[in-house]
Length: 134
Image (tube, rainbow, N blue to C red; front, top):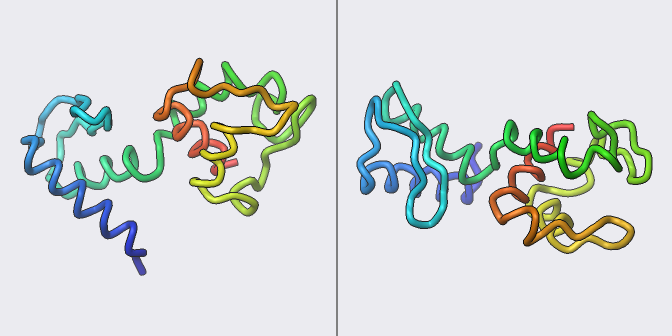
């Protein structure tokens, strides 16, 4: 069963796709609010589904790349080793995506503050989405 927030995001995605003119075969782009829109060779429903991932859940592939550059030196290459920082395995059971984003934006020492530089809002969301998969 879909949560109200998921229904809202779906409706917002369809509205954005319709209002910005994303159609079958349209190119990938970024809209005025900085939200990444999916490129597509598929129907509007598939495009909407890809856009929901970008809007609601973050881009885990991009998050993995950012993690490797900014986080792996302390949490380990796969996030499960730990080291200077703790293992992030099972973090989804401890923090939901919003809590993970909040933690990355305003961590407690000894974790370094990586927001707003070198990580942007979208970067933080993408890293948090990736960490939620560990």
